[in-house]
Image (cartoon, rainbow, N blue to C red; front, side):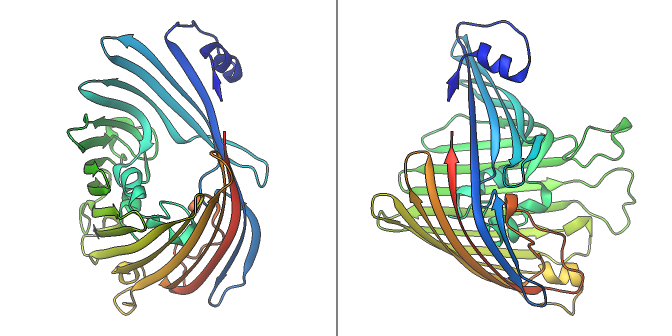
Length: 356
């Protein structure tokens, strides 16, 4: 739904001037679904959830052409939970301003990390669908999915190749006095997309705060390489990643994760997809060397388009020896690791998504 800048300012309760070359888009997404979760040794949960296949949101996007092939824009998104009628969560999603020219894009504010943003295209489940998400096992989520106080540069596209660099002064909150308690982060990514091929290489690092002792600590680092190739009848997905120094522990086990998957169109409006994920090292870091079982699991999903803006989805997944006990799939989030050890867990869901 497209509105003029005046309409958007009125909707936000603001006042300002209107530029002839400016425009604002009000957009959003609502996801409702029925979910079932059962973990070994735990009671099951049946629920109506929101945000299972895509985070429900309301957003404002604006752009102004200031001449000389240069544009200034912004994005401001608010997460919401329409299943419970909860109020909007302001600024928990994207909130940034950018300048775009022939030299590339500079973006300032709260925004997706490169791992979270670019690797989502490698898995058919992206960063949603509960434990089927890449967030479950790949280390980039240990750095941060979204970064506050961030400055990013995105290069122009050079024949399908582009790169990005980013820095956050404090990933979660405002910077502190003398920056003593800030957790800084570095992001770098290289991406190639041309025809049926997509390839992504990402490096991310999170530095521990200066007010913490350096004894037994080191900066957390994540690296991931992934890609897809579309043969037409079927698309192949694959990724490999490493996480070092989880929770800044210098002696932490190196975590290795990998993913393989397939997706295929079904008729004109359907898509069938599945993945298998594996992680070695996560359980040792969370529960000690005696718990060395690898986390592994598979997932299968199907989406069906009812229109350009509306689709249905259904999915199921089973993960063995996972440390993450999901009480639901809302916003693709999970609780902290279980206190007693890893569990075997099943998840099923079906729902509808509408974009506006």
